[in-house]
Image (cartoon, rainbow, N blue to C red; front, side, top):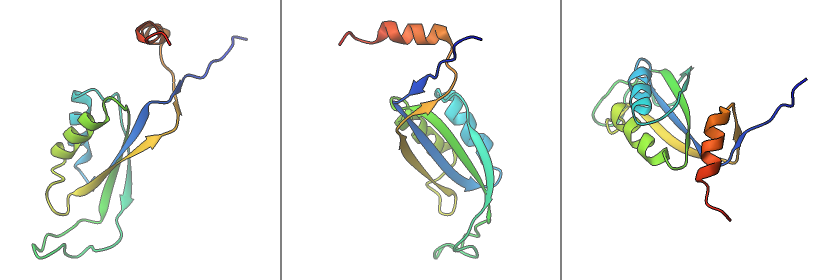
Length: 124
């Protein structure tokens, strides 16, 4: 049996974006174009003010898509901004986004990338 290793990532954040149903693909594409590696999408039903939003009278759909993307702390602001703009979240009723810092995450990282990263780290 071979030894198994856990690659722990500590400099990462979770971007969560909750939008109207049908908008997630556009937001994920924008995130991938600027370096995000992938995304998880799940579906939900919104609760709260459903009929009308504000004085504009914009109808808000209760069907939601929730997008989760884990990115490095270096990328988080850039990816967040592109997702926000792609989802047109500056429009009332379109959705909400937030960033959650992660203490640690674990996933498979190819050995070539780990070696490259270890060579780039400055000596302490």
